[in-house]
Amino acid sequence: MRRKGSARGWLAAAVGAAALMLVPGPAQADGPRQPARGYLNLHQCAYYSTTATNFFTTVVPSRDGRFAAGTKVSNTAETKPTCGAGDGNYRVVPERSGVKALDLSAGRYLNLHQCVYYSSALADHYTTVVPGSDRRFAAGSRVSNTADTTPSCGPGGAGYTNIPLLSGVKALDLTAGRYVNLHQCVYFSTSAVNHFTTVVPSRDGRFMTGTKVSNTAETSPSCGPGDGNYDPIALLSGVKALAIG
Image (cartoon, rainbow, N blue to C red; front, side):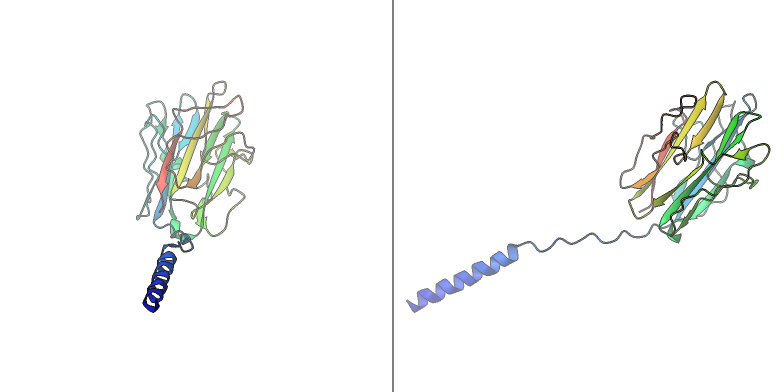
């Protein structure tokens, strides 16, 4: 009987130990995301039509590919904008185009500043997100540990003045996902024969864009409906998913 009791005790202990091994421990929390590295080279390409006296801007390629912009993430800080040739009517304007190399390791937020200018004489809008080479049409896009809430814009020139209602800034948390989905929405007025571009929502909310950081690489631009006079043009709009981690 003594041997039988000892065997039973040993068996119970073994079963208990096995049960402990099978009980799952507390789930391991995902570690913090690694900081983004490299440069987001934000290219701005300004196109102009002499017949329509009309500027418009791209920061990613239009969906038809004619109005390209070389925005990308790389380990190299670029200094010259890469732009498409346009369509023969609209041609690139070098002094209004530009590139800014944004060091992704410089802070938590990618602050995208959008500055919209308007000429009442020409009934023409013009958008910048980085300074052009002539520096009059500046925009304060930067990476920092501060989430900017007010757009920083240059004074304009040549009859173009800044329009605060259509300008805006969006602070993108670089720790929130693997991609910066940069949405470009181009709007057009047939009555004014005028384009203008938004990359972040205008401050009045009418001209929306879906620019955000997420874990999904987006392929279709998300744009607002416009205001009834200016309507979105799908062919000239676009989105680029920029991998940051």
